[in-house]
Length: 282
Picture 1 (tube, helix red, strand yellow):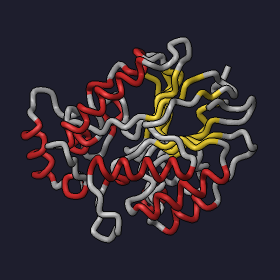
Picture 2 (cartoon, rainbow, N blue to C red):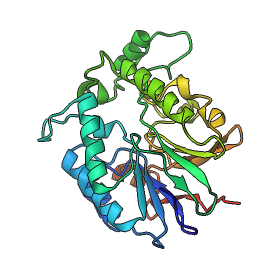
Picture 3 (cartoon, rainbow, N blue to C red):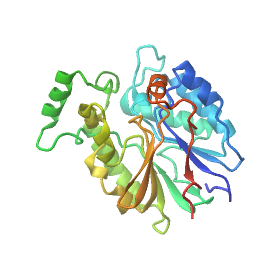
């Protein structure tokens, strides 16, 4: 699949549509042209029906929608009729996306040919492996540090890794599978790497609670923006929307986040969609 000439490549994440205020924002999202694409970098919601509702709405409006899962989509909440866990839940959501016409990490990577292109859009599903922890500490020590501070990700209770023995084992398997997929892409084209979690640990250095960083990625991807010739990297999860640069590569944190965060940090009225291209397109 290739994009039309013109249009914008847009991105958003962490829309958390269970919140009425967020749902209202999502209902108002519109492209400026029929050539606009939208990247949705995870945390659409927790309940399968909410996830399907939001992605269906967005696919009706944007020429192409590309989804990469966050941790919240992989939860198995007690009030969700879909009781699938772990890998089975992820595969169920992939099939929902395919029925809606939304692209996932399991589909052929699309090529954006609008402003800033051609570039290969690479949605990733990698999870985390607790390696964003203080140097010299073990996973067990880092988890104990988080528990002592009262800063424990809800994933520990609702994100089940079945059939893998742990979330970090699932992460390692996803990294191995993704490396194979990336080797098969057209190497002549730059990429836009899309992952819910930051690919490098540097963005986590400004977290208010540093204990949370261990649920934010893996050191295995620290050089992927260079190794895979990224023109841009899109991520979410941290709820700290901003643009940063690492090794000359632009990183876009595209979170909408929770209503209370927008009020706290005076983000009310901020444009929810971030331009990946053509904002910095040549």
